[in-house]
Image: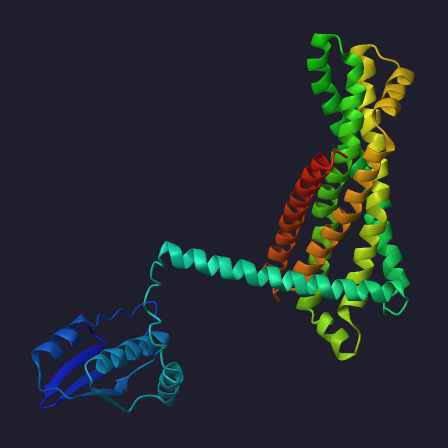
Length: 374
């Protein structure tokens, strides 16, 4: 078989004599001769492993003996160890201490399409119910905040207001100005063909007031602030800080979620007003440079064609968007796993969930206002 192993059959025993040094870098023993010998010698009922001539050894010997024990088990044969080092015996006992789970080697079967759809639907329903429970707890904690009974730190609330408001002005300014310029440019190209260039102001003002300002600001906050909330709370889950708050009798919903929720609810309408202004200014830059309009004519046309009700609709949307973004980030963070990978997945899911909820809610409001002719 090899220089390290000699095989001898004596009546009902197979003697496996181990010889020399066993090194993982030099020793390579094939079990095929043992299997062949067991097939030929049907009278063998026991395998005796003799290590009296064994030299130095490492994990190569343990691996060989472990595989040999599996062969013996598959053929219902007993294994007897003779003169093996104590270290080898202990390692073999440790390796076989926990039996292999039934079906561990089986590859997962391919589920039928109906089963996979059913499992997915059940998972979505359970996640939805968990989100509803989280929403209910958030409402209770917010009520305690409004009646000044919630346990939180004012410094945390001021920090989140700063982070969600002034710290976001740069990216909100850039995106809003560019959106206004894009709307004005697209409208100018088409309306100029009909000699209706003045209506570019209507297009920019109405689009920013009802839709774009609130939606784009909410998407920005979902990718910036909502993701930050999920990462912060997920990291606190990893460090067991949330469990520590519960142990001290402090509600994590009041101490962690409510300040973040209130910060976005307060700042989102203000950011939307600012985004409206920046988008209208961006549209004005394109209108004045391409259509030879003046600032006075541009703003006069907007004031006449875009009543305050349209800005009001945008502000109402912004409040709801702020709630959705905050809930998405906090929900994913509070339900994050306790590993770096889980925190990353929670952050990604918070952004995706926030944007999906924003688009769905905006679509529902648009349909509702159209039906009601608002």
